[in-house]
Length: 257
Image (cartoon, rainbow, N blue to C red; front, side):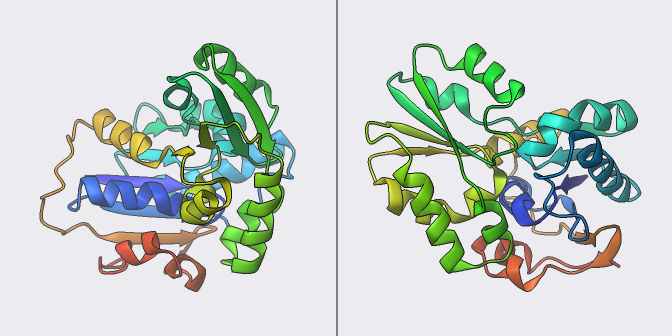
């Protein structure tokens, strides 16, 4: 079994680590686009072209499923990716965890990139799944880039800025960008321990395994291999990726060959 993941940068690490934890025997293909990142400021058409190129590089390795481990790409390019790759490859988008975060009602915040915040896609998810919860959308300029660069000072500044714009009464916080899950502890420290954080990594990993008919088996032998692609080129996990626990979780697994 082989699961591919794609993103502009290292935001795919959280979902990759979740897949690895659920199925240590699964081969992983991580396809990112350092030549074209960040994707957020691009036009939807341009972003879709970059996403398609990144997905094609992954698809060349014949995965059973492709996780679009990027909220912005899921907003703008998911239909194009599915049209090109399915049914040969199951394509799984990343959806912000609005429904579980809103289940208890009250005040909920969604931190997301400026490109995703306020988008018709996110507004539709709020309308369909927030129920009686009062939702505040909080754009987080610069946070995804800071995570990609593993710039701790920039991460702290961006997190502090978003926290200052988040209502104090918030009960739950949706991490609406896959990058944000890599700095969940910094976010938790900024918003307070009483705020529940809701990411998407484990849910999307579980969905990918369901789509390929492979139930979770965390006790499986850790035989899965790792292929890393940077803008289509064979590569290795970057130093920035290895600065996060999720990157280190993947490191003991073999590289292509």
